[in-house]
Image (cartoon, rainbow, N blue to C red):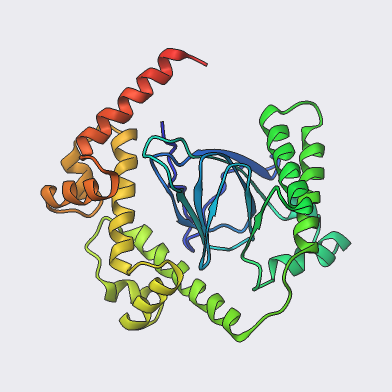
Length: 310
């Protein structure tokens, strides 16, 4: 059963990492991308992903990388990123393990040597949006193993797991900072500016996706022209604003089909589609099946999973 991949966002478009005060400042994810992609989003926390099974197309900033089983990808704080299944058949499992953690977990207070020497240069770097980690490279293999040890510690929660996770994530951060690129160029500044604009426009779409939206309205949310809006989307996300909006709406609809018993026609309207026939057509283009077939198929998988027990 696919997970609900649409996290809650704040007024700036950041994903809200739900955590009660005093809790350990890291969460783990066990994402199933077999059916549903992880949409474009961002957060202030650092993130490390390792492919558990299958192949996953990971996107960070303007980069697209096909990751195979055992490979990893580090995402810097504040960077737009997304993921979807790579090659293979529709039913081949695509599983991803991730740890999302606050920089202060390993950096401590902002006047500490750890923060000033390692975390601050990493978080303020405009050249390091993300980094591929391959088990074929010794230091990268060490970083992947540190990430998985942290994931297992947080998942199993033995006594003292917080120390184990912090130790392993500190090792990961050290390895990444020791091998990060340092030279910044004029093109780096342009990428940074485009990402800032994209964040504003994605937040506008995520807030108003159920309403009638034009490219002009999306452009205004970032204070730019329609032509600049179009260039920005194509440059950063490799789609037009309207293509992104359509795909986002369908993704939200897919989540509602599996998490609610609302009528399909009501879901279509709620997600910005006024014509049921057009909604069904676009849904089938993206998911390979009608909304009703998608709901039946996923409901059947849920029944089978519950029948097997833990």
